[in-house]
Length: 518
Image (cartoon, rainbow, N blue to C red; front, side, top):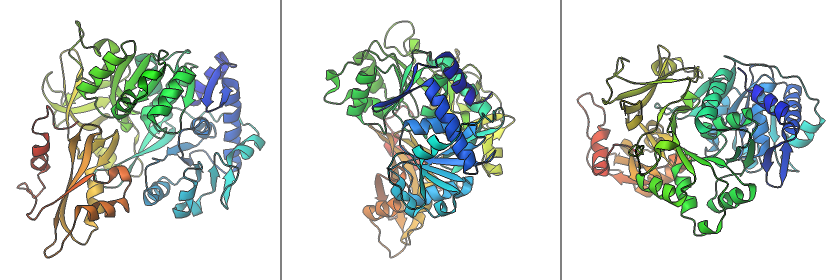
């Protein structure tokens, strides 16, 4: 299995069909194939060798899409960069991954001057501007002047991409996904989400995130079409759906809430919509009920997974996302296992638990990652006997429906972004005034959870919430920065083993909730 096969198939069976739309520009599948092969030729001319990594830092656009196929076509692996990271975080990933080439768009080109590692790149290429900074190469003329090359046909266990996530130790982890991983997921998605040649998919979430990426490959394999918006904006979203007659989209619950709540929502014709997939964070019951009643002809389908699973492990058949009838009552479930994976609820030793009992969600199958880049110990901890240990606590009913009830690893999901408490705690601990710090997730109506820090100052030192927040903004991405800070005069509660009792710290915030995480 190889990623570029889907693109080659689309060009073969639908050569003159609309493939991608980006603003006022569009391309057929034949044109996309030709541009991908030329981009691959450009990469080879720049010295990209088999197994080399190329990173991309950009908002959503057609060039980004083509690059996701061009890099493996040239024999390399792609490293998509989170657009919300600060310069030091981007530097770490570029250095850790060993990326040889960096692609940016005009939004992030100004960041280059703050990147230490960028100076050591074989090439830095900008997608979308007539003028580039010194040393930055223009994408379009270089691509058009390059000769197309034959597909290197890397596939199977060959590395296709490194997708960085937060780490429980504060150090980002690069998830290694093979061609086989991503193709298996694309096949799962095709069947579970119902993609076909009539699918007109809108890339509204960021393309660095695999929640969007899995549809990149699945829709392409079916010869559907892709529409791009740079970043999610509720009004632009409504305008794009109406103008381009979008049929399918993947959104996080906060995005669904934003477009449903927009004051001009009723003005737009959204009748082209067939399916809205949601995941990355649970949908509040009230919001899902509102969505189902407001858009009764649209199928809402939840998915659960993680980057380490390429990323989908379970989906909820739309038949069960209903308020009434014999299939009602499962709105809190994230569905059943997709076609090629096995999902279990396990005890600490990896043994399967009886149905109805709580344990860790573990997953086995061809979508399970190869491991964490340059982190063998973390890999060994997560992958045991071929099973990915998710760190989520769940329960499975007699019909195989999975319910997530808590998280075993110290992670916060805020607005669909994963924030590891350790990374935030490490940043705060750099403040000379801080003696103790604990970071937890607290419930939020709009974001699911928000990051909350509890700090204890050193003796005879003072610290304010504003100072903690300002410090964090200089050290970590904005979405990781605490939204609230509590300053305590007394030590944090400890277990007998000397660990901070976060369950005790979380308890007042979650007392009236039906589960300990959103």
